[in-house]
Length: 298
Length: 123
Image 1 (cartoon, rainbow over the protein chains, first blue to last red):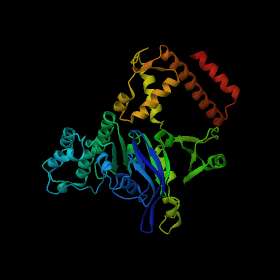
Image 2: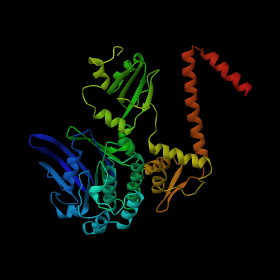
Image 3: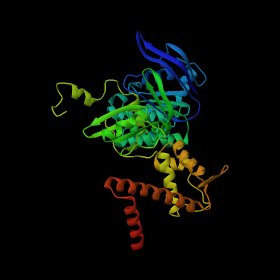
Image 4: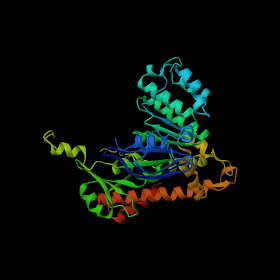
């Protein structure tokens, strides 16, 4: 359904994507994860055919997506900046949606809108940030597009509505399986919802694997420095943190027996992704320790 | 960066444990049908693939069996199997903790064994 090979995108001299390759060929929910500015939105725009790759190969539903009508009919791209005709009410927007998306579930969209306490008499421009995001997401899910791209769909929503909307995505996916790619900063909230994680880092795909596999890549060793540190040469160390008397090391999981007086804790997939994409400048604690702003006891 | 200290098992393992607990509580009966991965997905608000993995490990452990086109069912002596593995796993884990704590406190091996025998007599 989606194939990317060595995809590149630069805006002028600024390189965003340098080498993106992956393939999705069955319906599943995928979390697109990465630090700010890594090119998540750019990648989604290229898949949706809204932007053109600078180099490399991309195929979506068997076609090159850029300004392609078949792709446009099978793909929906939901983002903050989405606009609808200013003269239409939400009711009119939903009623006309079937013209663009043949499988649009108009009835479902109206019910979800009502559930979310958004009046169908509103115009899109009148909505608050959270309401806009909610309406856009409802529109995206109701479209039942074979490929549904959601770029930070929960931005601006309060926690209660976010939880409701995660459930909407799950239930509609079970009823109508399709490819759903969700980019989000709320990976810890989404971990249960998604099947695979597509992690972008430094313009490339750092990881594309089932959530459980990502979670089991690394573990945390906790204990006193004197106990943890000597054991570390047996592990691939991804990060270490020292906080008063507690010493923690994030290491790649292996089957060796645990050193004495060291506890091993499992990590969430979100933790693992954070470690894998950490900035090289150390931690916030290091900055405080080294700067004049640091309190003396540090 | 801060991580919370809680030690969470992967969700598919939690799902497998939940089904085992349902079997132990006789809410899922021998040769009875088990929830499908989609039912589990809706009950626990999780991805159906994750729920499927929970079912798969129970098939591998011979707690559940598959009937083609009909779904998953509970193996006749599933309850017995679960109890056996849990007993050995839980006991080993507790024994390890006792041995570690004894070391920390400087308790001699023979004193530890004496203590266990004493408790057994009392019990």
